[in-house]
Length: 222
Image (cartoon, rainbow, N blue to C red; front, side):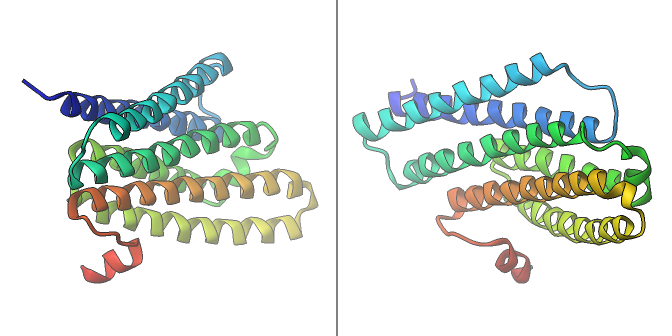
């Protein structure tokens, strides 16, 4: 029979998996909105956001209960510390996704700008990095961490190039200034989502190896 501590840690893991899945769905909705594909209604998005907030509070409650009433060993402490950090990262991913959806309403020349500067390729990668991040935690699979870091680097490189091209377009065509500015902000949000994913991957590495590492050092070791 599982101990009370094991039961609580199991609950904690399941909640992290659940909010990770909810945040992943929000990223997909943000991508659909940016690419002008059919997506969920605002009410559904707000429900998802509310679910993440409530589950985040449950994580805090479980962690506080374990610290106060149990005697977790080192590996359990690492898991609890990482879970608290990851819940914050996941919540930010959800918030940034909602911000992207709001920004897309102000991008009038969306189709032209997005197709011209290969934005769909960047959004595909941010969906992939979010998916892999959830898989990495759910399975505690260290082998996926390098993929997450490489995707993050690719997203930043491609986003920087796209932003540079959008700025050039704005200089040459004043009609694209407003839409271009909002598209740049959306791309910056995508970069930040990817950064939060790498932070989660770093937390998984810490859970497994009892060591902290940054993605630059991790990829250098390979």
